[in-house]
Every structure is written in C-alpha cells, then in structure tokens.
Amino acid sequence: MPSGRTHLRIEIVLLGLWIGVGVLCAWQGWVGTDGIAAFVAAYAFSMLLLSPDLDLAMSDSYRRWGPLRWLWVPYAAAFRHRRVSHHPLFGPITRIAYVGLLALVGLLVYLGVSRRAAPELSLRPDLVITTLIGLYLPNLLHIAVDGLQSIWVRFRSRL
Image (tube, rainbow, N blue to C red; front, top):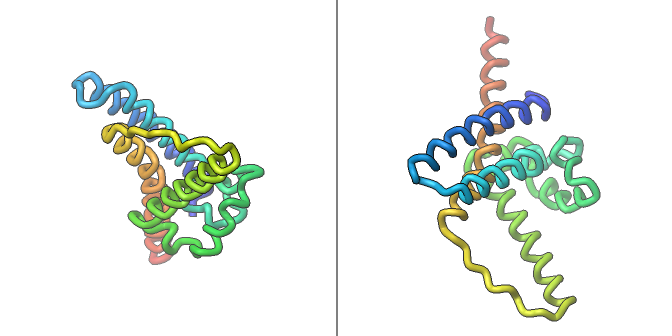
C-alpha cells in the first residue's frame, strides 16, 4: 500500500484542485467564501487526522494526535485494518461519528464541571454539507488510492 506520505501528497495536490473548483463556484454564486473555508478546514482536519489508517497504531495520522492518540485505541480495537475502516461509505461515517461522540462527551463533561447551561447552536445547512464533504473526501481518496494500488499489484504479478 502507498505510504502515509504518498497519501498526504495526493490529498494536498487535490486540495489545490478543490480550492480552484470552490473559487469557480463562488464566482458563480453557488457557494459563499464561508462555505469554501468550512470545506478547506474540514478537508485539512480529515486529511491530517481522520485517515482510514487510524486503526493502525503506527500510522502517521495516529501519531499526529500526539498525547490524545489514546482516544483512538477503542476505535482500533473495534475495527480491523482494511475492513470497515476502508469501506467507502461506512469508514468515513464511523470516524466522523466517533469524533462527534468524543466531542459530545467532552462537552457534557465540561458542562458538568462548569455547571453552565448548554450553548444554543444554530447550524446552517449549507455549511454542514460543505463541512461533511470536506471531512469525507480525503477518506474517499485514501481508499481509492489503496484500491488502485491493489489492482496495480495484482496486474503486475500476472505479467
């Protein structure tokens, strides 16, 4: 399989392409600059920290979590490598839901300790969609590159 650096390089190059597409969409009035910013921030977060390889203790994305990497131990225990974590639909959903669950637990602990009321949130649907696309896309690219590499290796072995 391609190394973590190879995946990262591909995702960075394609981020440049996605930003260009976003600028064109902004010119057409289809998306605002806040939507582009939400997409880029989510894409960068996902590219660096939500890789399908989080189920491997020695992966680059696992190490990037630094002192918080222990948060991914239950995830790695629940999902064997290249199974659900590398499924094009369920893999990204499991990681996004896992991060959402961690954030919810953190918020509940904070509210319990501080004894403050929960903040009122209003989420704009357009920003939620662009954020979810930004979170999902690097994962899909990672899975596609792994799949193409597997096909290439099988093809070369037949020659």
